Amino acid sequence: MEYDDPSCAYCPETVRACRLGESGERGPGFCPSKVDQAGIDGAAGAYADEETRRIAQVSAQVEAEGYCKWPRVQEVCEFAKRMGYKKIGIACCISFVDHARVLSGILESHGFEVASIACKHGGIAKEELGLKDEEKVRPGGFEAICNPVGQATLLNRAGCEFNVVMGLCVGHDSLFFKYSDVPTTVLVAKDRVLAHNPVGALNLADSYYSGIWGPDRPEKPPKKPAQGRRKPAQG
Picture: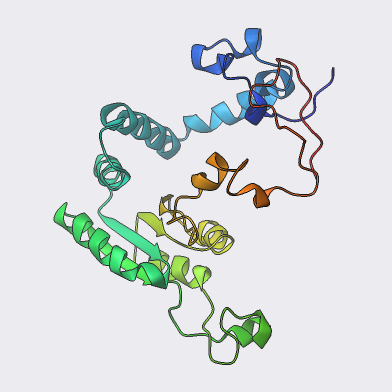
């Protein structure tokens, strides 16, 4: 059977050959090592870049030392220290300003300088983006845009060396990543329905949150597809 794209999401739990360095031998037909080894080899060359290699090394060291011991906030602090960063930026949803205050204090207690920008800064009306009143969260009054491009720009101008995203909306976070000049991590992924725990919808996709499926939902999605199984067509 021919495969075009890497599809690690369908790799059986009993395989996961990459963990043992055996992808080429035991990987399913849709394994990246089977469909795009050239891409893997090409990406590996990026680690020759000094900063890229350093980030990869420090990430692995923090992972090993804090594995199942450190909360993510502590991982952020340890990673930034070991990278030698001095100034950290926080890009937060305006609903997370109180949490950003706590994070800022924690970072400052570790000796970092901190700059923080909320998404609604500048108070720019949504109409200026061409949005209609009925397209607002609360129609009938002023509503400021979320301004992730501005957040990234201001943190760049402040000289931040590493940024932390807290609760930016889907899409707004994408724009922040696009315009940030420095490496960025996510501390909080916003999900107002699930107390900011998006994985909850995946854990309950076949029960409480079955409504997240589209019209082409398979009758019974296989949890452990047989090796070499063709992935379902994407809608």
